[in-house]
Amino acid sequence: MKTIFVKPKDVVKKWYLIDAEGERLGRVAVAAANILRGKNKPEFAPHQDLGDFVIIINAEKAALTGGKEDKKIYYRHSGYPGGLTSEVYKDMVVRKPVFPMEHAIRGMLPKGRLGRTLFTNLKVYAGADHPHAAQQPIKVEI
Image (tube, rainbow, N blue to C red; front, side, top):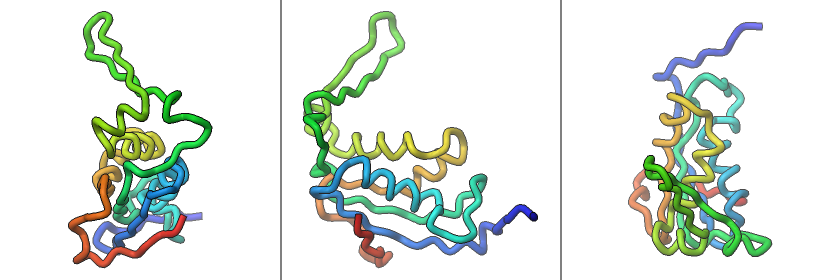
């Protein structure tokens, strides 16, 4: 079996719109990661950027189940001894409304150069407005 290799100039990239309002954070992240990777296309290859662009609106209104608003903790380290800080989900959404969605999707993409390139195809917005109406995005139902 031959390895499929699609030339970058032959790749047709579409734009997809996902409304995260009332949807579960993880379900939205999985749908977005699959579209970004190109797993919805028949010519999918794990070593190539064949995915499409994804716009996520209302990211701050994504739902969590099981009381995770108070239990889910995000950690970061300053690099100094004792520099570990933590923040609960509900505080993080107030401070950085799009971070939890971006963090979830970034963790589902491949690590390395390909994953960083795929992540640039993601546009996340806290509210319902986005500046990509000219691209005529296709709405995705979760």
